[in-house]
Amino acid sequence: MDFQQISKVAAELLTTVGLKVVGAILLWLIGQKLIEFGIKGLRRVFRSQSVEPTLISYLLNIIAITLRIVLVVAILGFFGVETTSFAALLAAVGIAIGAAWGGLLANFAAGAFLIIFQPFKVGDFITAGGVTGTVVEIGLFTTTLNTPDNVMTIVANNKIFADNIQNYSANPYRRVDLLAQLAHDVDHNQAIALLKTRISQIPNVLTDPAPDIEILTFNLAGPVLAVRPYCHNDHYWQVYFDTNKIIRESFGEAGYPVPEQRYTVNGSSPNGGNVLISMPSEIG
Image 1 (cartoon, rainbow, N blue to C red):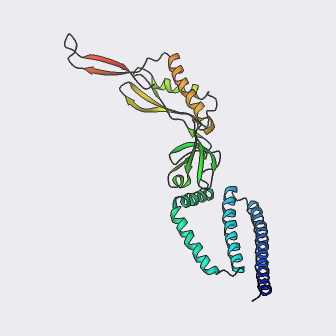
Image 2 (cartoon, one colour):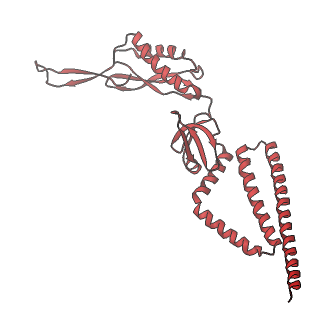
């Protein structure tokens, strides 16, 4: 075979390969445009159906990746590559990746369920995965919370979904639970009426339901009142601290004695009688 024949064969081969390369490039560009067009169409459809934006991103990412994989397999088939073997290899790789990234996939699935069932949304104040805070972002694998002491905390979605979730923002109001210690000599009915009047005047305390103030239990110092005003979650700590101040100020202005725990010790007095020992109560 002379040089001219070799040149002719090489030119034909390069032409064939070149045409296939150009064809593959064209297939990729056209396929990409079609995928982008289809994704935009699906996005408009989902938005028109008022689907959660985060869920839309989940679904469109999955669809786009799947379509690009199909496009790559089609291009390889255009080059004459055995796509059946490639598909089997791709499946094997997928299984290996799934086994290695089982935790990430679990977090991804949990995130999808959080979006679908919506136990909370961005801006809600929750306790989830052992963390209490305001929801900043619900991501693909993690959820970001800002705790009350302003610490950004990132929690794995699977940990949140596998545990109990408390959403303090879901209901229109919540209850503040406090205690007020009374001395034995104090008229509890008077104390209850006094606190109901004063606490109802605290800003952001709801009148419906009205504050609950009742005797909760008794101890060595006297009756213990349950003091329970209601408020919106946004005002919880303001009402909590103001209620504590009102308890302190109201009892002081009313002249109530300091609650004391009283113990009787037998046979310790000089005349052989009992001795009464009083200690300030820790509640109140």
